[in-house]
Length: 109
Length: 284
Image (cartoon, rainbow over all chains, first blue to last red; front, top):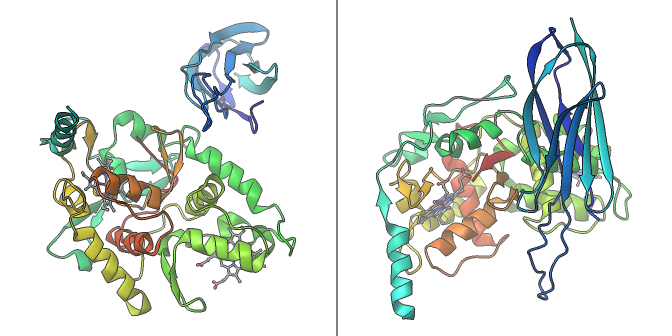
């Protein structure tokens, strides 16, 4: 179990139709690779976020598979074209079965 | 065999080469598009003859690392600051008090504080680093356990106090009762140590701007501490950084929290008088 996992997202509050906007996301997570050993020489079990998705009004924007070599606190920055007002949903999937979610509204004029 | 390997490493470490274009030393640091940070300033009077200008370590980092510090969203050090905001409001110890109970909101209660540390404390009759003062509040005012020097909780709280004072001009007092310790720190700064016989000044005063292997040497300022390092993906304290540098000269190093390092911190902090508080900063 990873403690203290908090997702953060930044999406502009408004945009014009068809505008390309930049989205930034970050989740605090240790991303324990499974390759390290503790002080007694025992392997530390793998514990990572293994998938990240972003949807807009039900349509998928990106779907990312994360591997153990990705560093602590994975950060994604990407662009999206917004045709209409609506909501972005962000979802992170943890090895331990936890699912973290965040939603951001955007008004398009 | 052993001997050859060691020699190779020593040669590697002291190979100073001319600067290549890895960093934009003329970049301007504005955080979140609003807080202007002074990254170049006239050197304080006590550096007459040694340096004419003092510069922040931020200037020597790569474009990508510089960018991470320009927006709090991109600065992973801010995650620790968020944790410290929770700790700030959490009552602890036999007195069942939180930092907020006595100091109010961190942003206001701690404004202006980071820029003057380390500083002389009259009651305790000692020079105190920020970490020492935080622990004094924990043990004397809260009846709580000390935090480990340069441990995660402590560095997060130092990060919050730096954030509260971000943009303030570093103004560390070097006269009066602090002077003796300051002189001790200055002597340490100019003393060659270790098998490599290098002083702080050899690298950070005589060679800043040059490359040392793959690293772009800065002036070794501490206005940006605590610093989030990409190398270990967490906040790092001043003494731990000193320890790494002393070890790189292949010397026995001082302990984190020791009087020697407090003296060195006081002196190094005063070399940054005129720069801005920029912690939590991002370095490689």
